[in-house]
Image 1 (cartoon, rainbow, N blue to C red):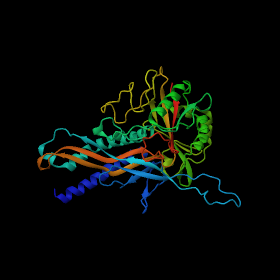
Image 2: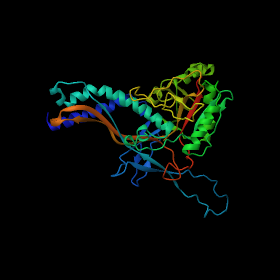
Image 3: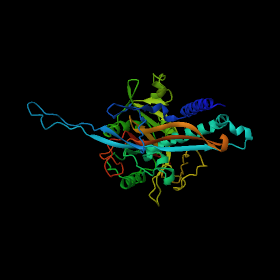
Image 4: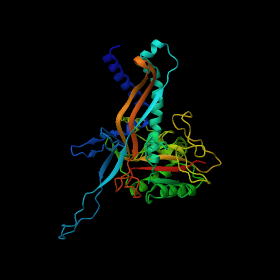
Length: 412
């Protein structure tokens, strides 16, 4: 095989790998590409997930993204002078990191002649890599929504990541079905320790009998969304919020008589946009999806230790890689009241994806191009778009209007 043919085959195979992963990647339909202006500022697409490409410069794996702070005020009335009363434009900042992640497959024993043809071997393991990447990326975005960053840049082992501290969302709402309302409002001041403790306290205080996600839950959301300044996403001229719920939450919603009547009376069921096509329902300004990998049964906390880690299971012990590519959802224990179904509510520009190098094949070679293993790599990361007054996101300043919320309901 000539060098030109080998290069061409790799380009084609890389494209096929990306496209097949994309088909199983839940978050792709919510992703838009941010453009960089001539002045070096980023112009967001307005989608829930913003993809930033090509920002890497030599020696750095991060960029600081500025956002103009909203201007508030009431102006000057009549002849009162405006001079010295103008509002100064200022910026908030958000630091986005990227880091390399690699998956590899060691094929079974091959005839010596076969391990010279890497393209054939890549095709043989492609389906396994597609399943692996699609599963990992789906829960990686969820992890970033719930804990601030992708797993591979928050790993405790320094060699595997950048070691950035987890950051929990400011908008963490616990639904109280007894009071037909949410038991907390987004008024906390952010930092890693005290805010984590505040979320745990709210979860512990939640009513254990609130195993419900119903029309009352949906009707209680709009005032809280407005108070939190979450901006809707515009799709085909309609302003909508993405609401992703767990199948256990969908079960109780489906059994609600008000829901049944409303769905039965719904006139418009078939929109051409795939955003609406894959949704289970369209209610008010909510597009509702059901996904058990994305909207999780969360291990929240227990009575003996202050634990809040959505991707640790079995009393806080992280699942081994061999357990499952989806970082499996925990089965609720009916005797334990600390298992929560966590829905996600998304507005525009709520998540950032830094993508320096998209998914592609790699190979491990012996002498004379004998292939011993097929790998794949992606140079990227996800991070919740929480803007701060300071460039560093580890200081104890308040988050500025995060564009998402976690909605916790008790699973009895």
